[in-house]
Image (cartoon, rainbow, N blue to C red; front, top):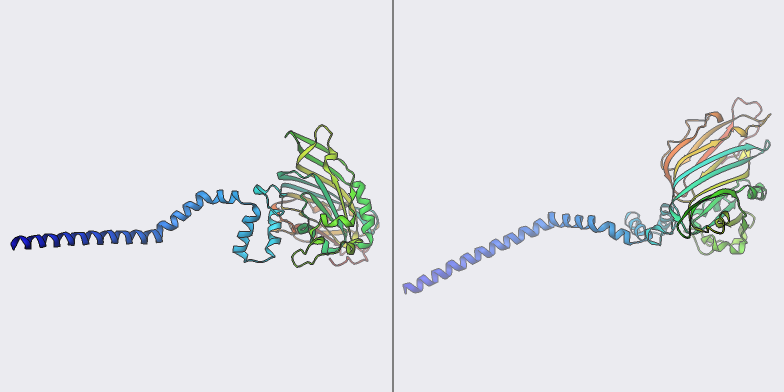
Length: 366
């Protein structure tokens, strides 16, 4: 009997020890679960994201990354596409941004030269250096006098290399464009099909006008709606839009055909009305702008008014604005050193000096 009692006691002790051990294990597991949920899980996720996040992003197209990001931050809406195209400089459907145009070094020089008391020549020289070489060497110029087109071209153009010119006075439009064509000079730095680098010296190039029937190939709003803008009929813009194109390969010799474009410089002259009271440069794609300069001194003519000027940026930062209305000789090179996205730019405004008795005309409202 004593032996039985001793055996039962031994079993009881063993069961108690087993229960205690189980309880200790359960408590340890519970503590580990709490620690995992509160500390380790977040740490592990952060580490996984740190290690794999960049690889995941690099495996996706810029379009996929930006679409997801904007939907998360702004909410899901069609207008996000405008932001996407503006920030990326294109649709960004190819990996590593191979279909995007981004200028990492941009300079802009404007000179205003009076022709007579009513008109002036706007002489511009703009240089772009691209982050990734542009493999499409078609260059397109959109000339327009319709504000709706001016504000929509950047989002509607899917070609990588283009420039826009806006003539505010519709009555001067065709005359200004015709005068501009022979003034266009383009230079490029490029790599040939074998990867060797060359420089195509700045020179005149033949621009071919595009028939309005082919405009849908150049601007998406002639094919489909663009945001809130319904599909447009090219025939309705025949008097306010002209499109020209050229092949940059014409700047090179036959032995060194263009494979991709590294940088581009563009010089041109357009005819404008003095009483427009402004001119501006607007980024066609994302551009890191080093500087922009305006030389309006030649705008003055004998017997005409003297002018005061003001630089007004529409950019992320407004540090390049002039403090007030100043004479032409006080407008120096303006250091921008900032990114300008499509829709950003810098405007030069002018008005007659208040003390000038020869000024009897009003500058038209912008």
